[in-house]
Length: 332
Ligand code: SAM
Ligand code: DTB
Ligand code: SF4
Image (cartoon, rainbow, N blue to C red; front, side):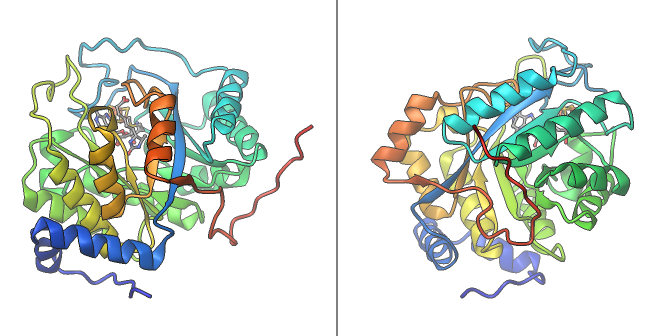
């Protein structure tokens, strides 16, 4: 079994990230199969339950109110609609359902109570429920946990040094504090980032360094390629190459061997061969469904075909999660 370390140096991570690509993929693949079934991929579905109108200024994000994008501001979706979408996702083979809200932070109001109901409902369907709602206090994290939340997504997005180039309305420390609050409530942590924001390789290494040196590694690490959206400050960013995605994925896999490494935004522009290299390098999770939050994702049929071609099988829910309280309501 691979040793789990929390004392990586930046130099060690840089050396891994910059190693010859064939060796990097081979090493990522080796660590991957020592710690996971290499034919198994977790299938997650995203739903934007509250879209647009966000007060933050994240320069990649189409949902920030201050940018003029095609995203229409919507109120929080009705609970029944969300539960219907979760059931559809489950029927299509997803085992994790992640609800996103374009909020800076959670407020203790009726909308939060409604999100708690949604969490309860999805948990009762037997899926891993995940939320990404912005900043959280410890008490709010505990309320989510009590409602049955399994995981919380809160990305670092980039390195601490590059952070203020991308977002000015909150700090890196705010981000770390929310992750801490999620941990304290015993909720599984999902945290990763985006490449293609104009960051340097050093920034990518810096972000991985922060993630890998957390007292406990995040259980999920999403690696997103920027989806450039018209109207955002990053609309003209050049597309990242698949080799950069592979370097990020393999490095994350090597330094955080047990984490689920998610090949997240950007799949719509990758063919099966490119995605196969990402799975080989250590990715073992994807978002399925034809939409991420507001931008396109590969169609269900295309992913089904890819799973067949690559002989991949979907991972069951709650695998390796004995500590998590979970009561499944029988379905009639
Ligand atoms: N508002 C909450 C927050 O920022 O934590 C939750 C929703 S936010 C849309 C979730 C994550 O989506 C961001 O942290 C970012 O990593 C990712 N994201 C947003 N826009 C993106 C884009 N255009 N391309 C790739 N990833 C993006
Ligand atoms: C994550 O790391 N990527 C997902 C999820 N966590 C919430 C979001 C990607 C969003 C891409 C842009 C959009 O569709 O709006
Ligand atoms: Fe708001 Fe989240 Fe988008 Fe930032 S990433 S603008 S916080 S929805």
